[in-house]
Length: 286
Image (cartoon, rainbow, N blue to C red):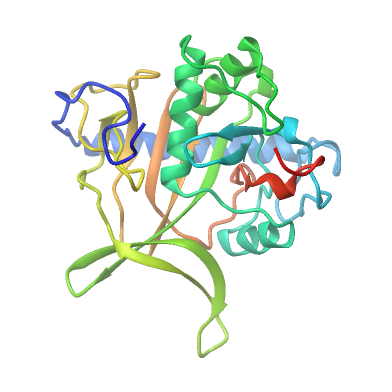
């Protein structure tokens, strides 16, 4: 499907409705989820599986199993099923991914993957792993619920919260988005983010629920008329703020696409679903 056209959804749902009380409620929900995640982390044994405490690095081999990644045919890339680098800020996450020859997915790539999983869970074209083998229907449905809300039992009830490769900048009344982010230092030795800059194309510039139509940069085309979350029909969107970065969050009640986060934030539940190409996987080329 051409990414420059709408991906999915009803194009008639374009009216955005901002509710400041709802925005405050969503932020309180996220803060409570983070508090509970920290409590769960204190009760976990360090170094067991992929659950880590804040500040610990997840060590992975140079070559990783292709059965841990879902292929995204529209971009000929692969995106991980599980979060890694949890508890790290964006700077540390980018540096950690680089050491493993992995990347952080951009909004365009991640949203396309997210919609692929949604369509497959609804009976559409099935998913395949990075090695080309089919993903089972049960795994697909569990993955969609994990990434969008509702039943999270297959993932031990954990929050889905990933960094996305996008930074927003306002210069002389013009808005830009930077992707392909890398860590650099300014004249004072402070870490900064740099990337490829282009004019931001984000039609929705108010917070609120939006429908599931996205443009070539991965941003929503229009608002959704409903005032509450409906899995597979809408997502809550926080529009871009200056010098902020993109993230996507889902818990048991709703999914949120935020473009208002700071890159220096480090939370126990916040990690990344890494992106890798064929050279990353055991067995070489697809």
